[in-house]
Image (cartoon, rainbow, N blue to C red; front, side):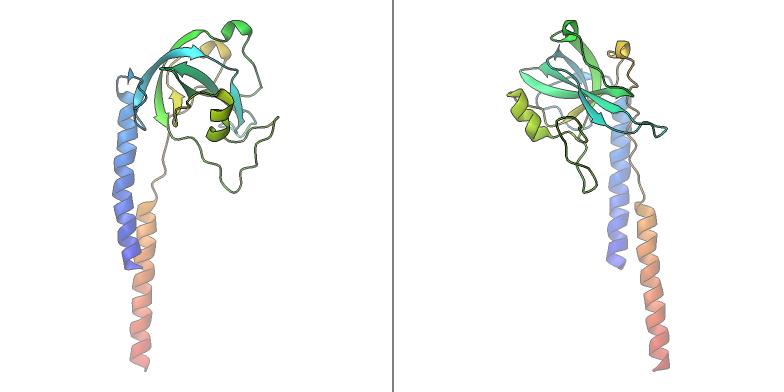
Length: 196
């Protein structure tokens, strides 16, 4: 148990550095997007919208039903999914909005993973981004990270821009819990030994 507490302290330092790195990314100037751009980097994406938005069910800040809007953008001969924002109602692009050039700043993040509580996707309802299926549908290389929109490029669609990512950091509490349990067990063992 003592080693588990020590491991949580190591995780605490790792999480602090990660949070600091992400926070800095939001304030940095965007660099041109490349196929080797890294996780949490801030990039400038210039390309064209190549398909209708993908609407993924997600609750809003006040618990209302709605959708995260992912827009496929082709750039550098690959497709990158841009999480453009959140909206309450379904919508589609008009034909005039498809294949138009667009420029935006974004933070590169991992796609949200499906967990055991996430329903499977269907033809009508999407609950998570299935990168493997999308890769087959687009028939083009799909960039493995999601671009979280940090610009006003999608203002005209009345999308709520994604909030800055916030990572929980509870490792100090976890460490104290493990150390406390270790201390209690040692005391209980010493009391037991004295009674023998």
